Image 1: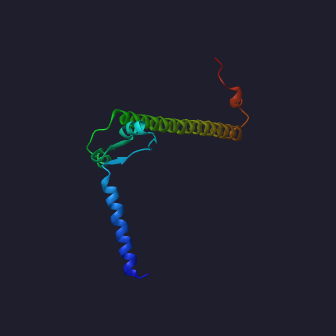
Image 2: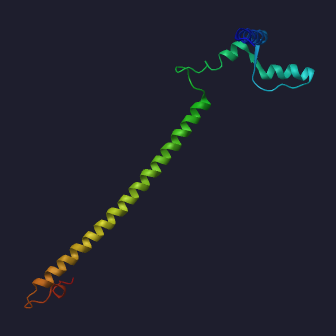
Image 3: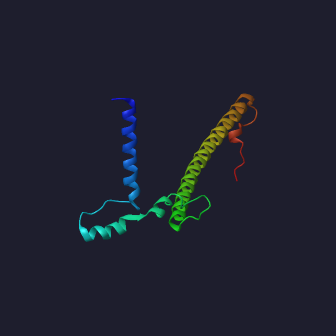
Length: 137
């Protein structure tokens, strides 16, 4: 086949396809039933007008208001995200508080041991040791 013949046949096929599609005034949204009267009723339910179909995606522009369902869904998502964030930071805070408490306890223990070692090293034996010289109330 010549390249001109292939080009001509593809143009004819495109033209036929466009003319067939141009004849339909409605856009399909779902599947059709095969019965006569039920088919007409289902066509009313399944098909929408061409103007509505072309404006379907243009309905929601940036400035248009959201529906209540969309607002509720967005609110639920934000609340769920806030709850997860709150739980995460609460867990982090608890872990940090536990870490700080353990560090403080260990530091106090080391300090107490160092003070006790210093007192034992500097004790000259003349006075009673610190442990026995406490004032009991």
